[in-house]
Amino acid sequence: MVTIAPSVLSADYLRLGEHAREAEAAGAGSLQVDIMDGRFVPNLTFGPGIVAALRSAVKIRLDVHLMIVEPEKFLKDFADALRDASGQAGATCIIVHQEATDHIHMALQTLRGLGVEAGVCLNPGTPLSAIEEVLDLADMIQIMTVNPGWGGQPFIRSQLDKIRRLRWMLDERGLNTAIAVDGGIDTTTAPLVVDAGATVLVAGSSVFNNKASVADNITALKASFAQKA
Ligand code: DX5
View 1 (cartoon, rainbow, N blue to C red):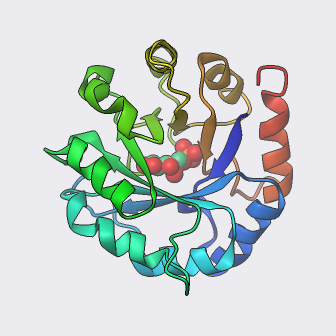
View 2: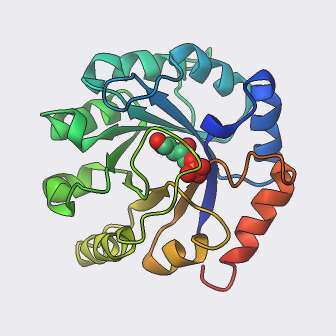
């Protein structure tokens, strides 16, 4: 099944909870929260507090995308920000960049140990070989189809072949790991990435914009790949 993961980077920060609930009501499979530190990427965004607030606003899975250096320092903080009164982290995936740590194997093991789903993300210039040894430790593998830092950037078409090769690598190992794609996903590029094997479409500016409502934008995205999924 293919799901939409709206990226709150493009949401209206004055109405973040409302926008999150609108996306949930419109059938989003998860929300992606872009954490940026101004070092791994040249932009600065949210911290654990915003993640905790969004956790209280919606029930759907939160995908916390760590675009930060030394992610190990914050894995527990973000996992704790997602815990409810019973101490459960709920439906959560924390995604670390392979490029941001010397120990991606340990980072993924740590995430699973914290009781959250473990995600790993690759920038457009990073080959799949960089995660070949940890495919079985990831619950989701995210392929950037823009260079990370901002919403509204153009889709990098060369990543389509990478998504196809990743699907083949996972199938060959009998792994049904989710493949997320992130950046420049709209009604034109969505069918292309689904055709290549993507199962989670991260979409920011094509969902949160002033052209149409969140619900209409999500409906249009789903319709664009309905024949492909
Ligand atoms: C970019 C972020 C993406 C971004 C996607 O660094 O990781 O999630 O918000 O935005 P669009 O969908 O507008 O390209």
